Length: 511
Image 1 (tube, rainbow, N blue to C red):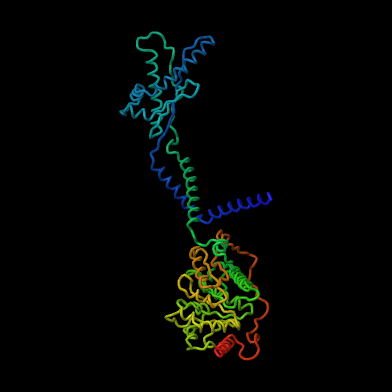
Image 2 (cartoon, rainbow, N blue to C red; image 1 turned 30 degrees about the vertical axis):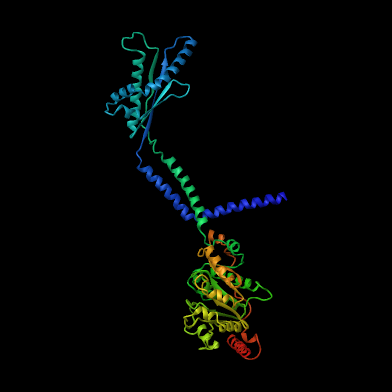
């Protein structure tokens, strides 16, 4: 039990580290910009600061010593004791005045004292004078002048005028100051290191804030945790899909590996739909999204192609009566479609169109835009039409976004289930949850979610649970030849159009 607990804790720690690394990689552009901006700002502030140069001169306090060893120790102790006093003398006005005269400057004593620092290293008799100036030569001259002034001041204190004997203590220059090569302030290297560290810290904070406030869908796990509904498909982003094209219509100039990867994703979605309920697979499927622009119409057309390629009859109905797209995607004639069939102006057999040579695929366009789309889609005639088509084919209804109008939720009540398309990095968790509730609220069934427009490469592809494989290099043709619909049911008109009309006639006679 303890080993299992340790393994779980180790896995959690590893996942936390991976999540943190992914966080840094996900927002690397903004984080890099923050680091560069911080370094640039510090560099600019450093560039405008005045340069300060420091130079150090030193002098030695020494005492007269005798020939004996004890006298030498006594003299050394006296020199160190006097050196402590001379440090204070070095910071006096008297020394500053002497240094001013040596330099021949008219600067004030207070100004000179503000640019001098006297120090005494521990357990020594050496006094160090550090001078600061705006130029290297100025710093060296001030330090040397201060040592010279301190020497004169010590001599004046130890040997006043009129004294005959030599002073017991003297102060002599030890090392002259030299002009420095680099300024002591500002310290460019230290400033840049601190700027980089501060920029990295700000970048990490930026990434954490972005992750906290960015509510857009970022992973499959996030969808399943938010809705409790399965993700039944992941479709990679592609220029072909962005241009609202079908994969089967893509030209030879497109990336063959990318197109085949999309085809495999669509086949996986087709398989997952068929296994949602093995005993009663869904026959009427509503494909919708939360907001416009998530690619639900393009997904509907390509899913229909994938189902038809498996020798299954499929009918696509464009139920987005406000912004119909299926006629454009399948390159069909517009003007006649669903609304004309529901109003009785056109027969279903005349309205259904075949977009390809496949006998298994038919498309029913939107038709004329009515003034009351919601009422028309929720009518009994619509239910009978869908039911008749579902007897002979899988019916895919391309519905408007859930948060824009109520059409998709209404159609969810006459369908076996709803598939919600989620555009990667387009919809927030709140929007998706609200769209999901709008279906459940009317007792509709959500079959699952399709994560669309996933980045096929880079860190985002891993975040969304998608991994492009280079195993596939070409699109292999599926074996077998599609069987015509006529072989599905013997006798009478066995096309999708004829069977649908026959089913509608039977239901009308029974009613």
